[in-house]
Amino acid sequence: MTRAQPAVLYIHGLNSSPRSQKASQLAAAMQRLGLGQQLRVPALHHHPRQAIVQLEQAIAELGRPLLVGSSLGGYYATHLAERHGLKALLINPAVLPHRLFDGYLGPQTNLYSGEVWELTHDHVAALAELETAPPADPARYQVWLQTGDETLDYRRAADFYKGCALRIQAGGDHGFQGFAERLPALLAFAGVAPERWLGTDFSDS
Image (cartoon, rainbow, N blue to C red; front, side, top):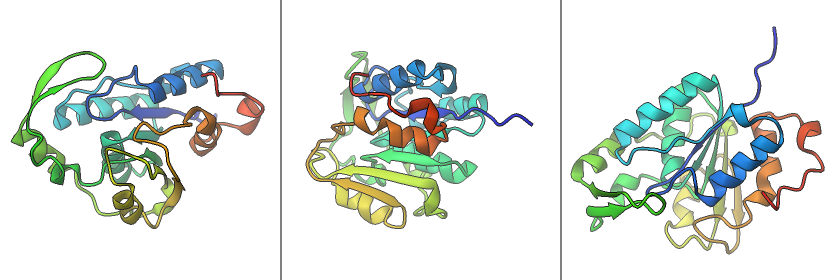
């Protein structure tokens, strides 16, 4: 039986897009390695229920991808990893985001598309429906945190994912500085053979 090609599903955060820096760097790297067809970076709907439908469809297309979730995408990735028994790499993930939206209801603007939409109590309720306990199998997770995250308190994620492989870096920001340089670690966790990427400089991705 032929071994399935490693695949990656990148899950962007709130008001982000496939055009974000990390998504673009990952897409360039996968393309460079001839794995472009094994990557999905869906432009997620702002409503969680619709976003999850999109992500379930991408998982069905890819088989058993590594889930790479940034910010709110990390919350989605955790829910899906627990539901399907998948591996997940979380980058400055949101923890229980439905508890963080006090005072933020109302108009929102996507930073990339310019779309204006309304954050409602229904969005918050839908996020609450996705809540999971801390990972049942911590070995399936890597969690990358930067202490300089100006949007989310990294200590919440460090506590929630404390049984997992935590990579906590001093400084940085919510966008996660130096992501391109860490792509080899992501590729290794996804199961891409080392000979495929060893010696590749991804810093210009």
